[in-house]
Image (cartoon, rainbow, N blue to C red; front, side):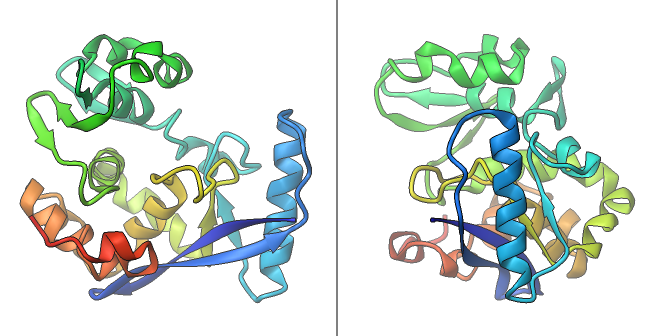
Length: 230
């Protein structure tokens, strides 16, 4: 058995995203077909709890929309042209002993994620995206900002997401990772429901105050809930 979250857009200013853990039978193996079996198993288990339809947001999704919204495929406009969210995120990391390694911006998503410098430069200390510096706390703020900034120009198209009860990412293990593209999709839907996406993206301080607040992180660890807004 395994447990993975379904992320649901709540659409309330004090409660944007609900994380619902779902237990299901896990199919071991790294082959794409095994991961797709796990998506089906997760969604079937969620259906028994009345959670349907769901959109898998990853390269393993059976729906083109879910594949397109993967951080490996989604691109953001930058002074260097369009680059993937994955490459933008990895290339902006600043470590105690190096970074940001901006040459990663020009890599494909897979190469960007596997760059050895990301493992050999000491602890992560923050992010630097074309001169805009982001702190480590709140933990998901920079990733969420990148993702939502890339999606913001497509709000009409993204209203298709309103058709889904929730969002999943079979690659995301909450015990090992922090950022999750499925959760950010739920966050996007909540902000659009509140007509607050443009306001949230107006500035870094507005974004942190609206999106990365303690109320947003209430479903996550107690550690996150204790942080004071910057």
